[in-house]
Image 1 (cartoon, rainbow, N blue to C red):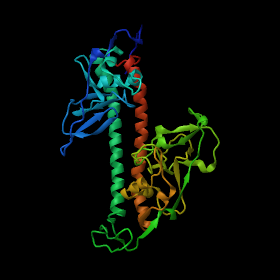
Image 2 (image 1 turned 180 degrees about the horizontal axis):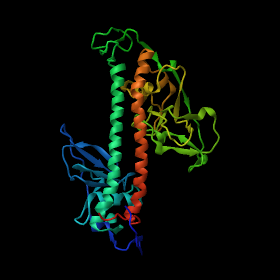
Image 3 (image 1 turned 135 degrees about the vertical axis):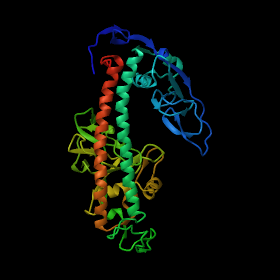
Image 4 (image 1 turned 30 degrees about the vertical axis):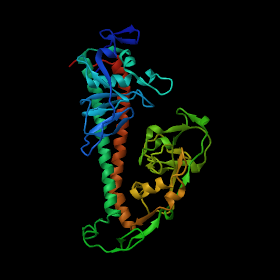
Length: 416
């Protein structure tokens, strides 16, 4: 709830009359992390570095509800929050609240401060404790800090719950795909799992498969088409068509709407895709190869009926109405395909995936009725995931709008 805000002019801008000006040293203590510990089989705590979670350890050097700040490198100034005990490495800084503050409030304040702008160093970016201690901040009373943090953390909790639901839905889909098309445990007309109930299997080049299934290549059912080779001068802020690009791919699988760019240059009809179409990343600028070959399905509510896709991606164009899109989506997540994509990667700094890596992929093809039944099972899972993603986006926008207003006192939290 909001109440009337009376503001005063200060050296850091307008703040509420009853707030003070201080520095981060007034509410927090900073210390550098330590060198990563040796690992063993009892790894149960996350290890945090400048770029987030980098592994696990059986040791800790930071308590639960710890704020972590990237200290060096390209992620210098990034802010993370660990709900559990953890280990923080020496390329990050531990931020602990003093008695006049809360860890959750400190986290959102650090996020608000955009610490990237306080980086120093002529070569590698660096953020040190002295700089952090001297950053000036508005200081609300401790009880108001708690109310501010609760509003923001409640939103983040809702987002986290939805993200966990999506992981569960995705896992269900992958399990069902494996049971039906890898382990051959689809249900027979008698309601029994095919393989374990004695279903007939025959030899094939990919091993034992159900007797009426075939070994096929994807190119019998689909083609892939490279997108628009665009010019940077036609990239615009918002006035133009949405453009799917390498930045719209999540590692391994999935679409990332926040990576969309906008383009107002010339293009052809073949460079357009729509909701429900599938893209495959044919380029990767990292050596991890996690994005290379990743599938992504264009979600609903992109903001336009059609969007452009770039030459760093392939659009999947069906030849026959046989393989459901979601079947292909899960097929392109199997270890067999992932290893194939990594093996086909060519290039030194920028990796490229040739069409053949996708089109000549061999797989065990089930009868049409079984493929359609699979689609009926997994499509509701995908729709629910999309709906959750919409809610996540809405909640994230609300949080991001509230964060600066609450932290500056432009919106006050009414006392209970």
